[in-house]
Length: 340
Image 1 (tube, helix red, strand yellow):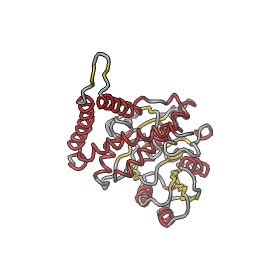
Image 2 (cartoon, helix red, strand yellow; image 1 turned 60 degrees about the horizontal axis):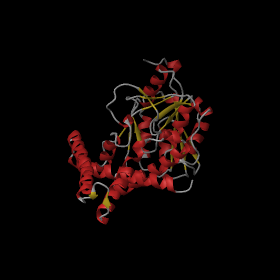
Image 3 (cartoon, helix red, strand yellow; image 1 turned 30 degrees about the horizontal axis):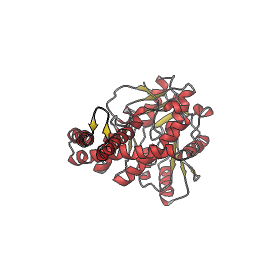
Image 4 (cartoon, rainbow, N blue to C red; image 1 turned 90 degrees about the vertical axis):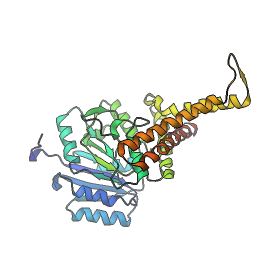
């Protein structure tokens, strides 16, 4: 459907940033290449403080004819998004992160879906790994597209729009009127977008996943930063579950449960405790179970290598999977154990 010129809504692109992410240059360049009329959208950057990167790239955006506003507030990302919405002139808010690259038709496709599906207040889509990403980062992107912890919103395998319970804010276009009812949590980070969507849906709103609303999202390119990211995801998932007990998902606890079960078997076997009926537990039982897990993630690595045709991605995939499971689970435990 072609949107008539007089019916094109004004869109405000809102981006929270520290101002120190080098990828912001690529983001601004992609904003300047959007096929949406430049007089019909604006760019709002909410940073911690003025930095050289933020100054240079906000200037670059203005030189490209983009209406640009920069606000400095050293706050959590959710609060920054709320501030961006307050500053926004648009009836539609387009959220993304400072390390993304936007497809040229990102806004136009999102607006098309919102116009064609009036029952939905927001739309998002896949976020892929940029071509220039390092092999480890690409392996992360590939695993994020699996169902090991994350849902299909990261993948390209769904050809039709579909109702979904959560769109990450690296790729989320939403009607401004929603913010009269629901706003982002002021201090929760990361996970503030998941918590936002929980309340959004509880208030009767619906959101859409559309495969043609596309951004490319830079991933962590080294194991330690990725481990920290997954730990933080787990920690805030525990916080969100505390806030909304009905959002509990058994998948998040699968690795922890398996780990505790395996350690229990090792303890029983090594201590030579006699169990009823079974007697002494053979040490080979937990060892075989351990090997089975590592075999499964190794097979996943082979599949990634075959699918991508890249040996390095296939070799990194098992490590990515283990870090994902381990880091998220440790963060989840920490989030539940520590005092709110």
